[in-house]
Image 1 (cartoon, rainbow over the protein chains, first blue to last red):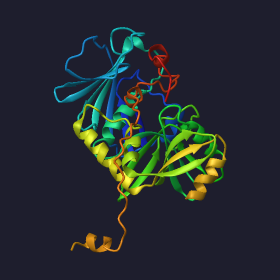
Image 2 (cartoon, helix red, strand yellow; image 1 turned 180 degrees about the vertical axis):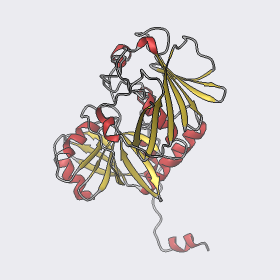
Image 3 (tube, chains in turn blue, yellow; image 1 turned 180 degrees about the horizontal axis):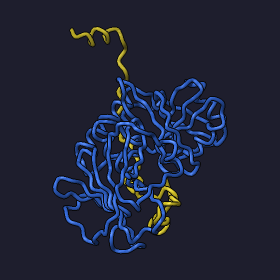
Image 4 (tube, one colour; image 1 turned 90 degrees about the vertical axis):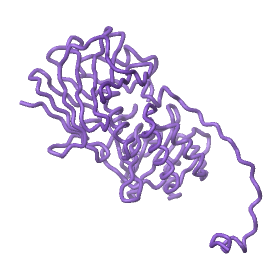
Length: 291
Length: 58
């Protein structure tokens, strides 16, 4: 019997399957809310146990300097995940078609506890797959928190680590009629000439995640302050601020080219603001009044 | 005269503003998913991030 798991994130469905009888999938945390069933997938993955070699064939095209490296071999991308804490062999390799619609994931059997279920898309593979798939004309993932206000409008709070994304999400979460899409990662897509924001399972410390989506009506570049201050920001510097908070596939010229064009579209169509805020709910009132 | 020229004919000229270069700080370790995003308890392989990554972050 085939083990199967389907997740839908930002209207993109990924189906993960395995024929290995002793390979069971586990899904936890924010990912549970994104589970779907019997939806035609955009991305298909097959997962299996393997004995992975220390060496890998192919041309290395990117090295993150930490857990993952990217190679190219025979027209496929190979994502190699390794940790010196485990050993010299990689613990996982993902072999992907270059359109990211199909791939195989190989798990190094000796490193895994026998009898325990696994989540084959464990970070950072899940985000890497989506970042690359999105960069093929579908959207971007951005380092931001996002909320849907009680009028159904989407607000995006952008910032690098420490800017206050999780704090902002926590300020909104208990307000009536509010949905917090994520306190750390949001996907933006363009559908029928409008920009939509989507929640993702890749939450921050607050653990906030929702599969909901909303029309994006405002982008706010976060900064801690002693007073709340909202200042309209021009499109050109806004594009730069957004670029500093996304995850471009730097090894793909086409991917970066699309991403820049997409961000240009975003800043031309969505008002952007510098937002200095003090850590209390008065900033929620300020934004809702501004809308 | 172009359409734009006709529209601008009655408007006062805006004062010249020198182009300004703004520096934006990039954090490559974040852009390439170099930070750890917390734990995945039942991954079957333990918490790789704590074993490997120098910092936690988002």
